[in-house]
Image 1: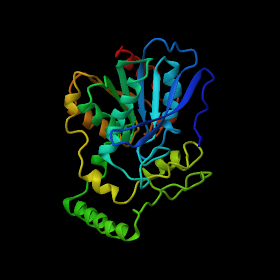
Image 2: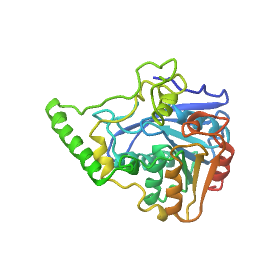
Image 3: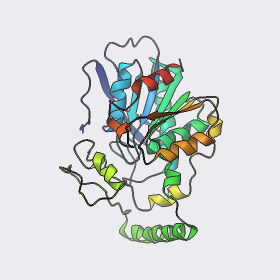
Image 4: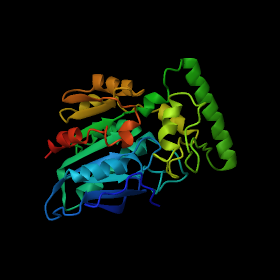
Amino acid sequence: MSGHILELSSNIERKRVVYKNRYGMDIVGELYYKADMNLDSRHSALIVGAPYGGVKEQGPCVYGNELAKKGFVVLTFDQSFMGESGGFPRHVSSPDIFTENFSAAVDYLGLLPFVDREAIGVIGICGSGGFALSAAQCDTRIKAVAAVSMYDMSAAVRGNMSREEIQAVKERCSMQRWMDAEHGYPEYVPSFPEQPLPQVPEDIPEPGAEWFRFYAVKRGHHPNARGGFTTTSDLAMMNFRLLDYIDEISPRPILFVVGDRAHSRFFSENAYAKAAEPKEIYVVEDAEHIDLYDRRDRIPFDKLAEFFHRMA
């Protein structure tokens, strides 16, 4: 299946690849590089993780295309249980496995003869920002991290709920496990339609309408990204804290990229406060959260290239 939201530039090669994570699950990715790249020498490489619930044909393909133009080898991939990657049941969310898959991507890139093992960086978009940072906390092979429109999903599922509200969510999801066990398959309720809508319905409040402005219309719609995960996935995310050791990424650098109008900006600001130097927040003017998924007139590719070229 294709359905990439951006047409590939004529001077860029895109190659489908399959490799395994440490659990033996197949990960399907795509490798981007210049068509005239000298594959007899070693080059800096980047891993791009999709937004939470997204797939490689959406935002990551934009980053792969544009950053390959700047001389990087770029790997995008579908998370386990998502898109073309393995894992069953489908649409399960696992903070451990989603974090592991960034390290599995490092494994794959480091075995390529034209990749410099000492110059592998990671870009995490939205929820992948949290997973990418979590991977870098322990995997020292990741030399630099950029979190773009970051969401810390382990914090997001709890939000600002009271103890009583959290308990109610746990009770509801725990009871759903009984139903899942009885039915033999976990409940999954997609958020977005199978086919793109002509426009976003007017009765959807923010920030829900923002997700529809990307995932539910032609701009970013993909049949493999219907939104959300299995209902009981929230229990796993509530029991996991992604960024407890973010300060241990230092002395490797972190770049947070946020839109000035992003509803999610506080996630980056909170993570920045906890991280150790070197660290930087780069604010993009006139940009909401989803604009940094695909808006080439907003995404600061020159800034990202400058940041990651320092690895070499």
